[in-house]
Image (cartoon, rainbow, N blue to C red; front, side, top):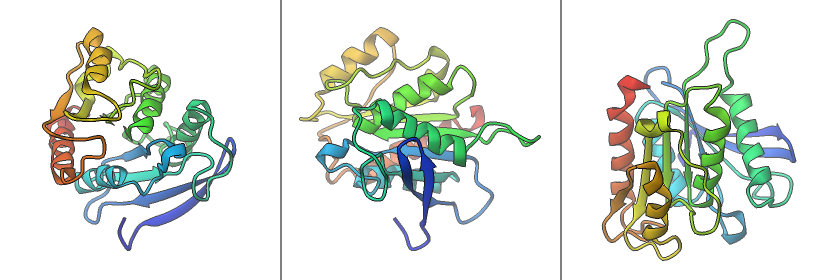
Length: 220
């Protein structure tokens, strides 16, 4: 993402997990954001442009951004597991690089974000972590509601959650995301004319994420 990106190899449930870490240049980080990439079988990696845009937004807002490759992608070990193993990969990254309170140290603030398949996995990570840990921010982009059983957002987490979707998404129709969000009364922010990969609209995507992070910072 930038010349200062740190590349890490972590132990994971299927072997090695490849991680890219970017930190804000100025003050101490506000916390750690873990960002999940789109479908591995369709070319999704942690270097996807939308994923990198999410990372840039978090870093600009003062957060350490962690992108990682799901099992079977890049230098990450294992094979695709339809979301089950990928959830365990995400939770392993959280446990090692943004752990809960331990040895008398306070819990680091944690944010979760994902794009497409990564948003589906992130929804289940939120569901798994929320009962025991407060998540400061959640960002779900192009959420793959037509292809996977996306978990509902816990009611108490809704004000911390930004759901972004392109009006003209031809991979995941907007109507499908609204059908998922409607029973939860969960707002969806629609980018007019936006497709699944937000070609030409990544600066707008970044600005919307930044606005959300700054607006909710006092409550995080």
